[in-house]
Amino acid sequence: MTKNCRLTVFIGLLVVNLVQNSLSSVVSVGDFNKDFYVMWSPNHVNTSADGRTRSLILDKDSGAGFASNEMFLFGEIDMQIKLVPGHSAGTVVAFYLTSDQPNRDEIDFEFLGNVTGQPYILQTNVFADGFDNREERIHLWFDPTKDFHTYSILWNLHQIVFMVDWVPIRVYRNHADKGVAFPRWQPMGIKISLWNGDSWATRGGRDKVDWSKGPFIASFRNYKIDACIWKGNARFCRADSTTNWWNKDRYSTLTSTQRRLFKWVRKYFLIYDYCLDNIRFQNNLPRECSLPKY
Image 1 (cartoon, rainbow, N blue to C red):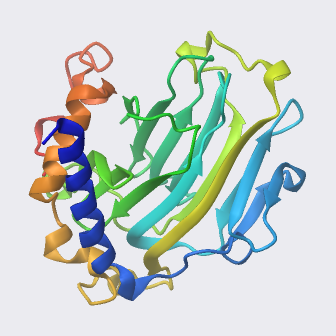
Image 2 (cartoon, rainbow, N blue to C red; image 1 turned 180 degrees about the vertical axis):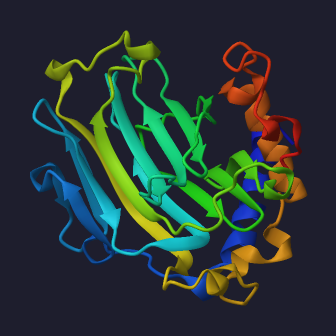
């Protein structure tokens, strides 16, 4: 069996397992008009008549963004995204959870555009108690502008897992008992945006947005929100129950299949890991860098 065939089989088994264990607590699977509100520039937001597909537009005048009506504490969020095609240098597509507090918690996917012919960079980051500096960057193993792909955040009491088409690309483990901050008390909303980040996004800001290539369009569809809606009681969302399937022990760490896929991503596609940046942290890496990921 070839390497690609083995990878396909692993992903297939992983998807079946995830679907079987997440049907009982789906909050929503579909209508952007019902589950989200536009944060800014409604004239740069296009939504299909049935509410199932939405696009954001970036031009010289503005970018755009939308956010969930509800706040959540733990769960899994899936979003299918098709990124800006062609020359996308300086553009940033963000899909993230945030508590919007001064000492905010935040879990980020940020897709950093590039010049034509160069690959997108996927940056992830975790804010906990207002502190971040936990960036990781990878290249993807496909062209994310050609079709929709599923980007997922699994967030529970034990870990945060970032996934691309069900492949785990990053794990941030709960080591609060060892003095490492972990998002576990603040409810977070879902936010999606497309904006001009050319001061930093592409080659450290050296490549700017070329407005002659615009407008720049990113598209979204087939999202699933499978999470605990915040009603003011953290104990309800932290409970181990049939509804809160993500808090069960089986989701406290990666499975053996997930670990193999995770190692594959780290070996072939990782291009930056803050835990390997001794220069940045002056040989005093954050505490979680010396602790296990699973």
